[in-house]
Image 1 (cartoon, rainbow, N blue to C red):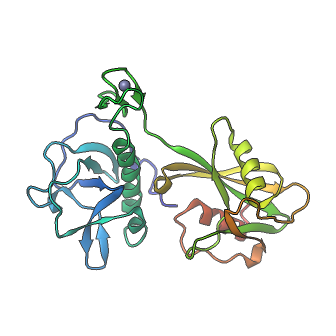
Image 2 (tube, rainbow, N blue to C red):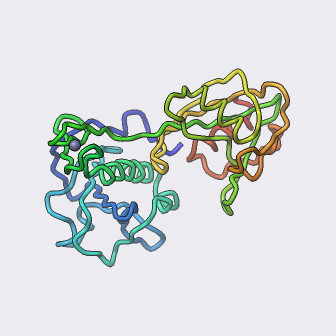
Image 3 (cartoon, protein in one colour):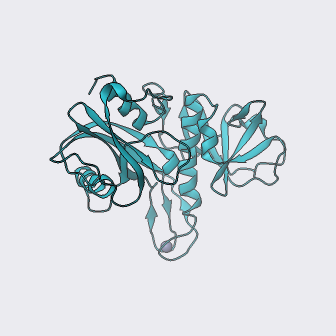
Length: 277
Ligand SMILES: [Zn+2]
């Protein structure tokens, strides 16, 4: 999976002040997109040395984390639009970047999005200040503290004997099969979310819910928890809330091989196909 870059290779200890070097990666968000460096066959994450003079706003780079000992910084909006750069949505990260860079890029996007959308206090409207001891934003007027926001969500591999339920989302022209998934509502446990989402999307009841693995997924600013669960009772699928266009039972041997092992969904489908779960 995308985040599996080696034990200890992602380091997110907080440093309030850290000087960037010419080799460090500097990401800049604008319109909820990232400025990436154009390459012959795609994009790369820009290093400090890639920015022409006068482009970055001086002394605004904020240290985020390191991946494989390369530090990632977030900087304020650019002063000018450089020719050699392109403003891209996070989908561009999933194309030709090495996995560790894609993971670092989308994780920086997740943090950058949070910083950008919390510039002012939601309680009193005062400009927020950067916390100096941990990663937070503090309102100097009313003391409101904002911590980075992560939305928990579940992915459910629903099984019935030797079969797995694969789904397709309505309205998407691209993309292969998926599993039932959804965000947790406030007040729900993972198990509650699973039972509700399964009932809402495919009209089934489930039992024997078993945790599989999790994945940080900055594309949707979420943390995904993957579970397998067995159908409880009638396995007839009913597409209830219109979110899905298809829900089909696949025998283990008939599950299509995955084309990428980047996501938890793909990993779960492949684990079932191979008889590992
Ligand atoms: Zn406030």
